[in-house]
Length: 87
Image (cartoon, rainbow, N blue to C red; front, top):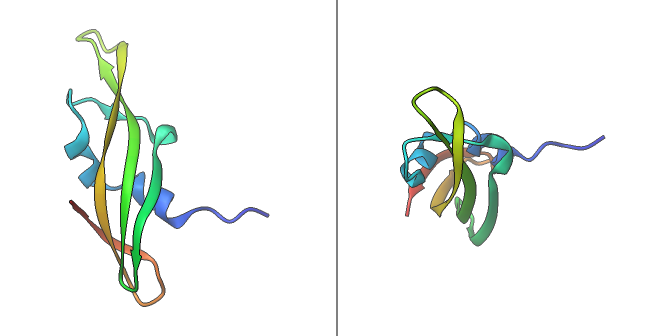
């Protein structure tokens, strides 16, 4: 049985990722990837990438743009992510 990744789950609902979108499109959840750059007791610095879906006025997807940025994730005493801040 495979345990789900709590950071990945958090990122799928993280509003801070919208700041990395360049065209006011939608984040494609399945494209979200991250790399831990720095680990501290109460935080993680991560580099995150994802695809942004760009829509036409008709509602059809016309393009996908690569987006990326860095987030500082704050952890609770159990190591669960409780907040994110753009770095």
